[in-house]
Image (cartoon, rainbow, N blue to C red; front, side, top):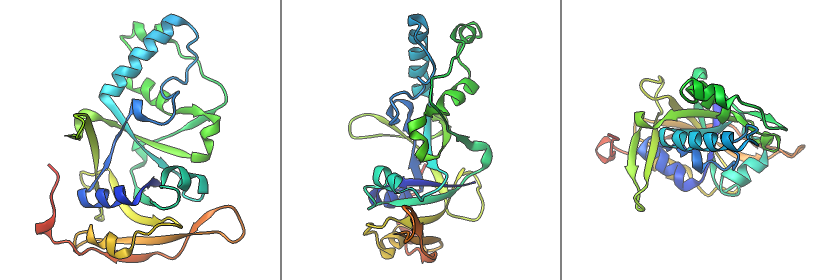
Length: 240
C-alpha cells in the first residue's frame, strides 16, 4: 500500500540520514480522545480504561500516514505550513490499520475484557482505529508498533524515544517501511542537493514538487525526477 507521511524538512533529512522514523507514543498523539473513543460514562469503566491506556502507552506506539497528499490542510497542519514534505512509503497491507471516523462514541464491554484478563491486542487495534468524525479529512492510516521490538534512544531530557527503521532498496528485507518518494511542499526550500547529501551514493529517490491545482482546492505534484545520493558508506552511521 502506498501511503504519505507529512513532516518538516529538518526531520526529513534526519530520517533519510538515520534510515528511521520516530514512533509516536500513545499519549503523544494529537487526538485527546485517543484510546478513549468508547462511551465510558460509568466511573469504574473510566478507571479501567485509563489504566489500559497507560499500559498501552508503555508497550505500544504508532506511526501515522495518510491515504493521499491532496488536502492543503494536511500540509498546513503536519508539514510545517507547506514548508515541509510528504514522504511516500510502500508498506505491507497487513501492517496497516485504517482509521474509522464516527460521530458518536462506541460502547465496549469493559467488564468482559477484565474477565478475560484485560484488553487484548485486537481491542487495542479497535481503539486506535477510532476517531471523531471531524478528523475525517486526514484519511489516516496507522501502523502500530510494539516498542520492545524497536530501537530506543534516550533524548536530552532523559525520555525514551523509539524508532522504526526504513529502507530505500527494492525489497522490504527486515524493514517494514520502504521509502519510494518525496514530495516537496509548495513553500519548501529543501533543495535536491540537500536531499542528495543525506542519501548514500547507491541510493536514488524519486522527488516531486507540489503545486496548487489550477481548478480545485487541492495540492497536486509535478513529474517525478530522480535524486541520486552522494554520501559514502564510510560517512554513514549505521543503526544498531
